[in-house]
Length: 275
Image (cartoon, rainbow, N blue to C red):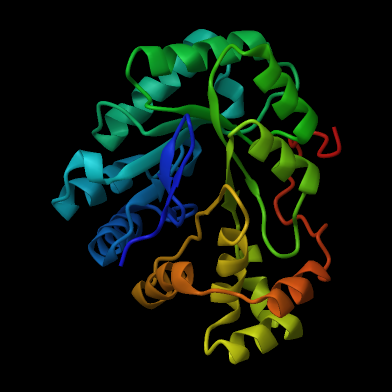
């Protein structure tokens, strides 16, 4: 089984992938190899995760052709000056053992960053073949709109926390309007969806798990990709199977009534989310 594909003018990306934070070492390599053997074709890592070597080893050990695996990595927010961004991307590719990434993202915006210069450096990664597509992560709607409006780099994707308890209509609408794929991290609210009676009831109705319902809800949204993390083969299999789960109107309405403002990832250096 493989995940469906999202295709826009700027990117072609499997709609369900494997998040790898915070796995490292042998755990990360085994998780990647197992996921790829199971049918996953989309892997998400970052320089900050400290697992790019393990992810690369997992890809190499899978026996798959490079063109069959979509790989995302990210540049940390302290490395956004053009020369530093380039060096970070090159170091990530060396650790991954790859000549290019399918998607390279700015991991977090820096409050003092020179946005045009950062976007220019991203654009050059794509022009020079280090990345097939580029984008940003953890940008609030106003900053994303500014980045798109500058027209310096073709923003193919935005990666943000998104799940049944955190959904931002303004951000999602902006992504759809500009053909930006919205990649949801922490898509199962770090597993907390299993504690919600509404999610449990929908899961029972479909002979599924609350996590599968949470992923199916995200995949029912136009232009959304989900990257759940799991080292467990059983959980990986369940997550992948969620791509085939179809929720009905009653389910969607029930999930719509859940709170949509429960943010779980909010470090000290996070941007103003309302900006």
